[in-house]
Image (cartoon, rainbow, N blue to C red; front, side, top):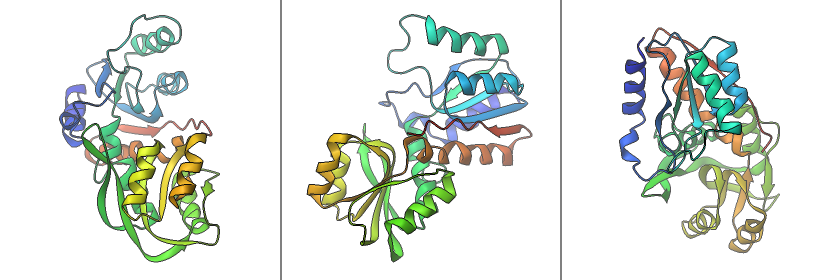
Length: 254
């Protein structure tokens, strides 16, 4: 397929235009060759994933965390230069989708994680930069944190989930926000009557906030909770286009 066909499909499917205030520069960040025969999908545009795309002869790399944020680059040196050198020398296009991939109602990190948990009656949860990026919902029957952590591990391939809260508790009303969260998410979850928040990571300073709010938290890993979206988009692309696809898995353990 042509690069224009693929990027147009991604732009429209992920509704990039609905996220004008996202700090990430969503869409094409580095333009490569005009044809796409092999596409690699990953969480991070780190040197490992970029070199993996090069080594496997890919000409397109889709990521959740790109290399251009805000006003962009000031100097093309060091780490940035090394990443760009591989991309340009190999003719690889780098495409990033940050908040659009968190918020998407079917392909997003949070939608996919909610489905993996078995949540029903999903409603948008937690507004960031003018858009809702997470979801809240209910389970058909209350479950322990251990049971829910097992579902997350099975779906994401993560080896560990940290739990902060009542080890004997059973939870039915759950909110999901992938990546990392701050006090505002914890506050909103408590105000909405959420019993358990599933996220990637919380900071040290947020432990006592969650505890004092009476909110239980599963921290399943920033990386692990954000593998869902790239994999879902990869499956969507493979089902619609005649192109080879692959997921580059470089977990951070965080």
